[in-house]
Length: 230
Image (cartoon, rainbow, N blue to C red):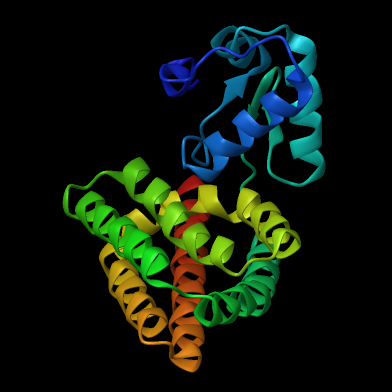
């Protein structure tokens, strides 16, 4: 049971638009890598951490379950679902089409301020990998990708990608098992350099390589876990 550990730095919510705010806080926790496959939380622990009643928490969880981002683990415990091979393959294909569109648009709209922000996040990701900090790496990885996707200038595209990442981001915990974070950082640096240089084709190729290699490692990790469970 994960308990309240992940919520220690969470600020209690004000009594306004609770459903939306609780939903956003839960999305943030998932997207920042705070809930890994196999970990679980409860309605009561979330409600206590956010200083709200259980009702808006249940409603937020129901919305995220409908998106495939959360599932009932056992009894009153909720966690991120373990994805199967078919689901992973589907996410890989969709990510490859949609996220490469976003990166191409971001290249067209790049400016010095954006490049500086992106490089700063890249350094944070490299530092997290060097220090062996899993959650910090996953958080920085999210920041890196979404700094790019926000630069595309399409709120609709950003929302679509965000919903996809609610399902795939927790699986990035599995990349550490094969030492893939270092490989991922090399791919991210190539992606950064292509964006900085205005090379859309190279940026798309680098992002596809990042998506494809992550898929292969996650799939291998899931197969190993299944074999260990017998």
